[in-house]
Amino acid sequence: MALYVLGRGLTLNVAAACLFLFLAVACSNDDAARIEQQGMAAKPAPVFSGTDQRGNEFRSGDLKGHAWIASFFFTSCQGVCPKLNNVLAGLQKEYGDKLKFVSISTDPDTDSVSALSDYSLRFSAKYGTWWMIRMPLDSVRSVSAKGFALMDPREPAMHSTRFAAVDKQMNIVGYFDSEDSTDVKRLKSWISSQQ
Image (cartoon, rainbow, N blue to C red; front, top):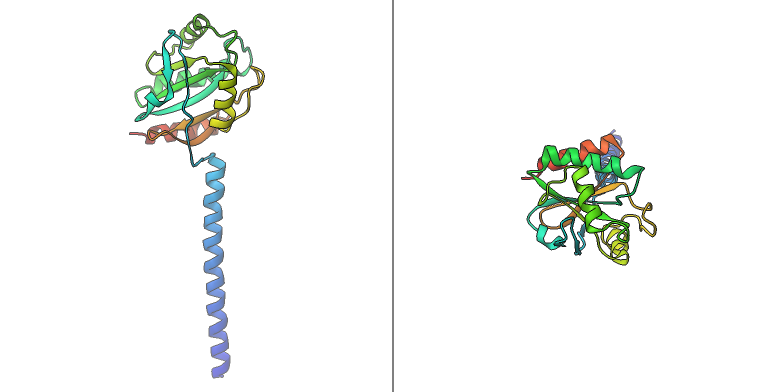
């Protein structure tokens, strides 16, 4: 009987240890899946510069100390860009006091300072809160693909519909699909958490 109890106790201890390990692994896998699903990235935001909608030099490094959202668009886009920028316009209206917005043109040959200025008025982009910038195409491609790990816009229409969220320390903290209302809600939650 003592051997049976010892064996049963040992079996229970082994079973408890296995359950503990299973739960620990499952929880860490859930955390990893949640981070992956949220698009969390342990990577610094790219450093870049360009010309904004007023013809002034824009430098991403000047945003240190501010949370911000990066996006890609082009002014002659009739498809996703107006939708994407309508989402940004709504976010600016609701959260413009908490963060900044940087929209990078994927068609710098067409998107002159004048075109960017007109486009920024169309979406009520408040200067000093929302910049629309242009830079050479090779820089746009590098900033998008290498810097933000988004789609390489070899052609203007080949840009991502996702926003990249950047924290005050200039780290990319998440990606949010502008066309997914659940993602936009998650983005709003992140914005609300910013001080």
